[in-house]
Image (cartoon, rainbow, N blue to C red; front, side, top):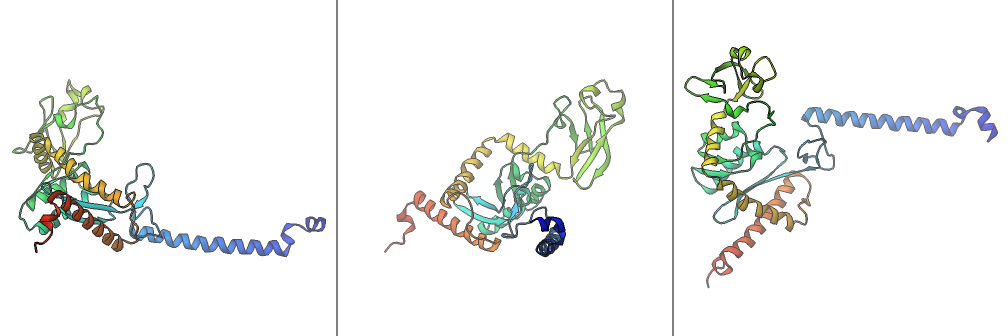
Length: 292
């Protein structure tokens, strides 16, 4: 022991080999992580689960949520049966509204459709696309956080004929540019400088209102909900029950298979089982059993 201390730590063959092995292991780990980083960049992803590469985190509030899949279902209001479903690894429901609605029209073989959805599907571009394909959507509009000290955007009236906005002070706001990424048009007025209501409107030099390219579709949808508030009650009572029942049937709502293709098959079997049970409960076994 004294001899080892005297000769120094680095002179021991055993320790030299341990250092060599550790450096080699770290080098291999560095290369492995570098390859994984390249995969993340190629896929434009923030998180990649190597045991389940098709899964994605369903949101990033403060940190990535647990990777999973996004099961979509369309339930018929009258029968309570699931008429169409899909499983995706897209976390944003609003991107799935239009394709799910189109697929449902094809399944039902109809040329018009009314869709009731929750606020997660509120997307002006998707709703406008649905309108174009004769799909009428009713979903609560998502609004960002607003400073309650100032006038709300809903207090500014848009005039479609002149493409201008009338502010609470009665001034006319005109288009002053576009925000391409957010698909919105900016409206401003030079009257803000001397406006007596400016302290109630903005802390900046002038107030800016952004109007989405497809805002008209949102306005029409909002009018439908105000005209018939029971639509959202109908949605909740129609689609939440099947989803909750399937989660309970699966023992907690976790898929047991791996890979998007296998998960789609598992979801299809679960929904088939639900539809059979629900049909028996609603229509009775006699109506579902062929007569002798």
